[in-house]
Image (cartoon, rainbow, N blue to C red; front, side, top):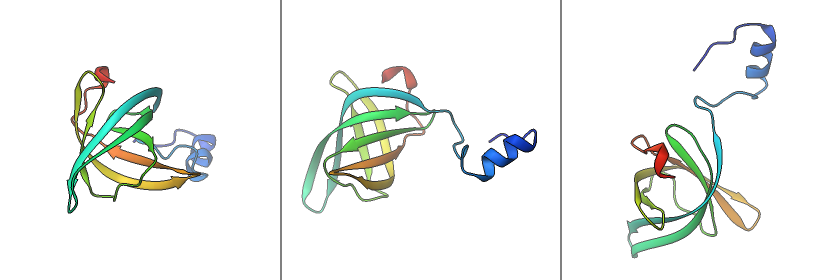
Length: 108
């Protein structure tokens, strides 16, 4: 994370304008989230909204518990494993933040 270089940068950081470690890039892509829990194999269709170097924000119709390890897939490829960092209600859907340290950006 870069340190503020001047007072206006410092003020922006203090006000929450720049909390991210990595720049996010907007995407609109259907993905499939797969995982195992006590009920067995789970699959959830979702829409990727944005991505950064190590993560993806998706929107889905069901919640996934933070800490759950999932597999993220597109129709043509497996993007890799991810860990659910947060799951926040947004209207009738959920915004799910996924940490994917091994994700290859070109695949999405």
